Image (cartoon, rainbow, N blue to C red; front, side, top):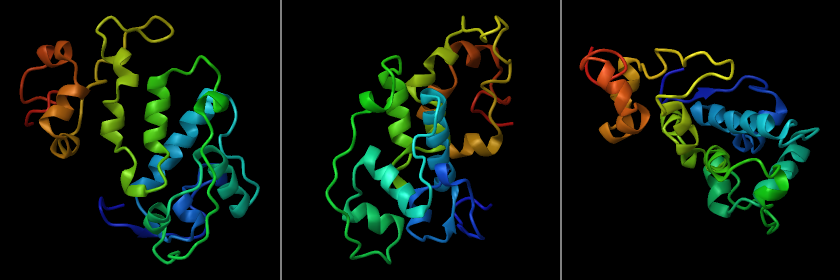
Length: 195
């Protein structure tokens, strides 16, 4: 895949439960926004212990999505596929996330999930923005450990030169905690500087 250049779809690009709504609406352009929707679906499944949108076919899949997110607006339908200019969508309100998830799912996780699960593909959170989301702040705590007690990987905050070029300085500051940046000399991977 070339960033910014959609690829034409061939057959089904991903499992139905994780399929972005623009694909259900017949879009044949595959770009990273499709994967971002799928990430949201997988994250929701990890939090719930079962799929968020368990449709049995394309129409049923869309109904499952609408039952949770509410009906898309006309602008959102147009963003998914401009050919559906007169697609009739009944006004259905979204469900409360409190009814979708158990009480132990905090607002930060729901916030990043909502950012992934946007009808408009261009409105979805970008990958590195998602990594900088405050739901992952515990990973940026110098005292954080893996569930087995091991230290976090030393390269957790290392980014490729391409990733660093795609990030603003403020995003890199949110991604890389000060303690990690202080340990990594400027100009080496993981600092946001040049290589």
